Image (cartoon, rainbow, N blue to C red; front, top):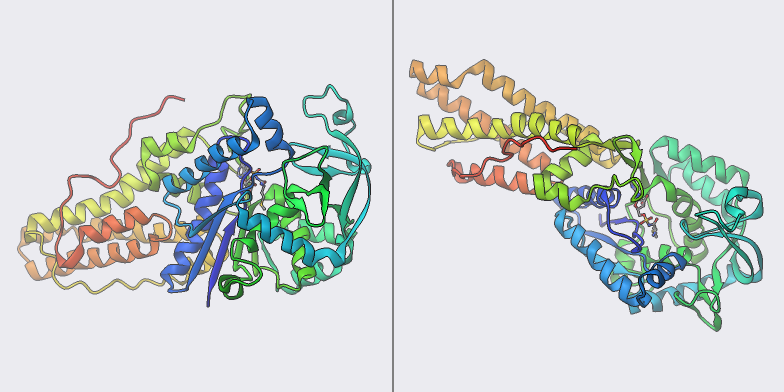
Length: 479
Ligand code: MSP
């Protein structure tokens, strides 16, 4: 069965941070796991480049919007590369293909679109229309640092209200699965109240930086409406074979702040187009820094580049996948990161590899001999991945790492060597290698470089010594 997985597409008004990195890496595990199972896979990510926020940012930097988005989109592409993220495509909403296909989609949705007057507010930071009834009175004041824009304008509207019950039924029946359960319940409560129609365009005289509404030069599409379309424009909606073969997505990965867009507006658009909903929406939490919101003004933003430069890409992936709860918010501190690095990666995994290789070199001239692959029950790892419980999957794998170290401590191959029981020694060491190869296999979607290194160390029944330890012990970082 074909497998299609997506991340949300970040705005390019600022530098990529560890929240974006988390999402890239989580989706990457799903893509790599699917490929490992032999499923034809497409994994897409990209950047969201239109809207007021980006237009304003460009003005503040004295750049044309296109100059800003070209530069910043590159940063996100680099981030994916840095993190060893295996995306097959990278879509930009300023790509010509996306713009043209977005217009086709608009036309196909016209039976649910009407023109009316919008009177209310606009939250530029979140790129959302805020109806009078939901507006925070403080932010209505023009001198508030995050003051809303007051809008009174002609917009196109989308008949979202007609889809509340249909979407709710899909979620309740499990055809559109949302994990975790808490997020599913949250959106079900919204759907039970019923959805209102939404504005889906802005007058061009107020915002030029957007995709023109087909047939109406005076309007551009609302950034969210058009950005959501990326999930199918990137596959070549409507005619391309990738679209026909890969939609619906198996899993869409998004953060908790944008659930309403992905569990209400996007499904309604799909229904309106006569398309099936994605099978699963996975909603991750937010990362804080030392318990505080990441923010430039607090000055607590750690760049993914800094972490990777100090500890390597797999240490980064490991921390964010295991120690940020997959179904909840999580915290980053250098202290916790370094503890995980030293205790779990260096002491537990690194040592198991290191001492196994060293003993085979010392006692058997590097010859491993016949290895029968270890066969622990790893069904739970697969299940955890299917439910996007990356933390739990790594817990399970680590049980095997710890089990192996315990085995080595109990069997004491060095004592067997002293006794001269070479047959038994060969068996014990071969079993250790079998376990490590199994662990490498299970770790492939999570820590691809490390898995390759483990396989290379024991390839073809021989130990191939490297002068590099897997996870060299690290010095404490000053906070
Ligand atoms: N452009 C929209 C998404 C459009 S998808 C059609 C957007 N961009 S964003 O840059 O604000 O966020 C991109 C992703 O990063 C979202 O899933 C968001 O939840 C996630 N995160 C942003 N800050 C985060 C943390 N501090 N922690 C974890 N994820 C966070 O929304």
